[in-house]
Image 1 (cartoon, rainbow, N blue to C red):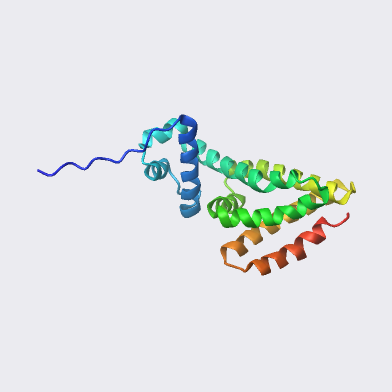
Image 2 (image 1 turned 180 degrees about the vertical axis):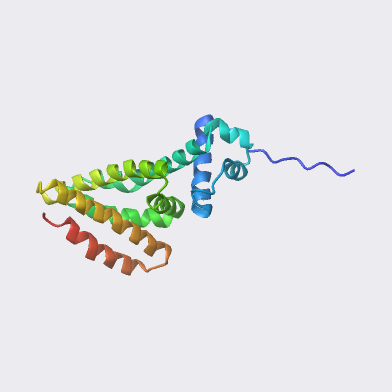
Length: 200
């Protein structure tokens, strides 16, 4: 008689740890399958837990998707925006965002890929969530522009510059994923970022 195959179960975790594990798996799933195709079962399979266990943390698909996207947004803020804001020299904060973003895209490509998908997704709920995240980033970049130049400038001009910097980050990420050399990426940053960060 052959032994029945036993299901490999995930090790026990505290709820907060399990939730983070599920979110990380969700980011990987969206990066490979897309926002629309990722389901609770994908996370269950990746983390070796039951599908009902995933529903315990994310009761429906809308909660699942918004939670994963919120995690992506927070990680980008933590690894790119906040370290730049913490620099003591205001003049270095804005220019520091580019190498920080370069490094993060290389180390955590799935998070940046999901950010790119998120930014181009136009279902009403997902778009509204992205616009709230985008506003936080634009406000932070605008503050860096003002502090770095020592000039108030017109609010609309500052906001437009911040939007252009954010938009150029998407192209910079594509360069990372396309295997463009660091030298060429740095040249892109020099020609795009420095004029935008110059005195208003």
